Image (cartoon, rainbow, N blue to C red; front, side, top):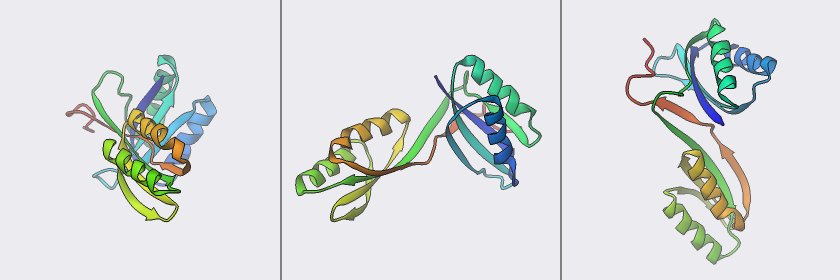
Length: 164
């Protein structure tokens, strides 16, 4: 199972390295990582997707809460949340037929073509993991030249994830 974990941390150098070291020392694998400042420049939000069972999630949460720079940890186990990821995908377009089909698919998936060259297009798409994977599967026959994903971003619905 995959579990998104949101970690609010003090925005200072070395925090990411300490959290990465904690994961490495405990043998936890990070499936996805997204880090940015919050609305408060002194606080950063790290969204870490961890793969494993409930026991792994519990250990990750306990270990993160022990770190000095960690302000709050949300494991989203019992709270509603919104999850999104952004991907940039460069796709081969060797002829007009393939280009037209890719344009049609971007419309179906509510994606956006952001660059066009003679032999490829770059598509920007956002959504959950299932949507991104379905789009990549649909365009795979045309040939994926490059892909780049941002990592998952997650926010709690309502006030359940707000720092107090």
